[in-house]
Length: 315
Image (cartoon, rainbow, N blue to C red; front, side):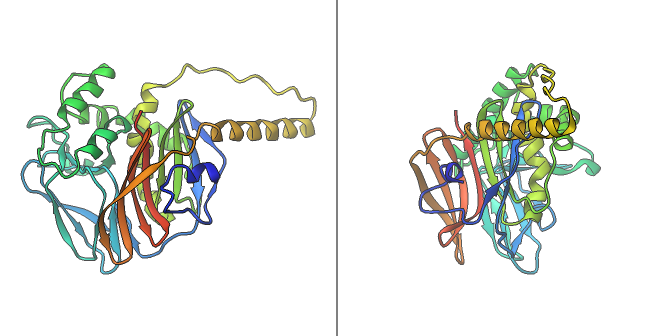
């Protein structure tokens, strides 16, 4: 856990958290995170709703829960029938029953048309390649501010060079969904560390397992699955174990798992100075923006412990 602490500000801690065994699907490796849950946080899909889009760049969300604060996940976006698709640049805290207008949202669909059917409405998290820029743009109004970066991502993926993120999110959805099917969400898992190849790309921690389960598909398929799909390696068949009986095979398998776990943990970044700037607060919860060498993101802390974190690599 010492290496995991390297990814969060020194003023906040992860007491009681532990890492599980790595899982790999193509170029994407996921290490489960387990830890103590923080009850009373409204989950993003069943409690938080897109209320309406009030013109370009203005997104209104509603916390429909009778009680409990909602943590709006960092870089959440919505595919919405009858309105341009948008993503938020920042996380947020919302009280029970609160409706809040975000005026600094990014339109991720550069022109009219291309709406999805109502049955296909869902939310996503911005792909990793766009997250650093989106975080920089928080608080700045302008619905088209991410179009150039979306166009560049589309170009790298051999798609039409335009500010339409649905070229990836919808047209490649069947391919990206395979990451959700090939990686296993473990019981009571409330977070994960993600790597593309041998490169750290993100740490995601939720308040509790239910919250993380509702974030599972958007994170695995879109936030990190897009980069993994682009980096998908050629399939290499593993060398067979040199074992002559069942006991030897079990020992070889255990050694292989231990070696793999040690290798993956060595990919975690070394300690770097992280600066945390408070953005907003609700009761004892504090939302901070975190920046440092090669890392950025946002965390929600309560006293000195982390309740929610979305920290990603910036290079």
